[in-house]
Image 1 (tube, one colour):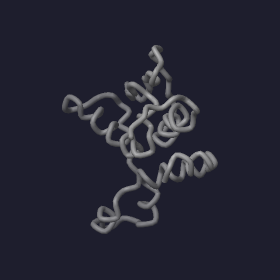
Image 2 (tube, helix red, strand yellow; image 1 turned 120 degrees about the horizontal axis):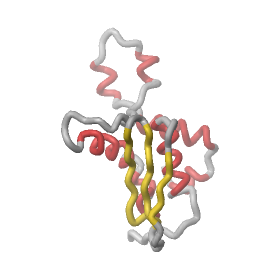
Image 3 (cartoon, rainbow, N blue to C red; image 1 turned 180 degrees about the horizontal axis):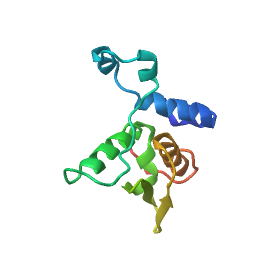
Image 4 (tube, rainbow, N blue to C red; image 1 turned 90 degrees about the horizontal axis):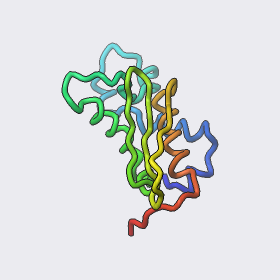
Length: 135
């Protein structure tokens, strides 16, 4: 999937793409017993939104792994930094656009994992902002 192909899709198609990319590996599915495979196919990785963790950095690591599943689309090419933080179920996206001096904050309260990834797309690859040259 490329940025250009993604831009041509509808919002619902992009949501489906996000869910597909976050779905669990088929190796996991084959190891499960006593689980309805059709229901399991609809499940996918989700952000840990509590902000509480047993081990320092556990939530941040988990959530960053989810965001990084979309790095190949160039989501980081538009920003000097981008960070997602959760506390008590409320998400905030912090970012600073490449070649811009303003630090931005976007509240994502009430959003699920798919909607948050889509919001990141809207702020990055679905914009016409300047992107950094990687090649």
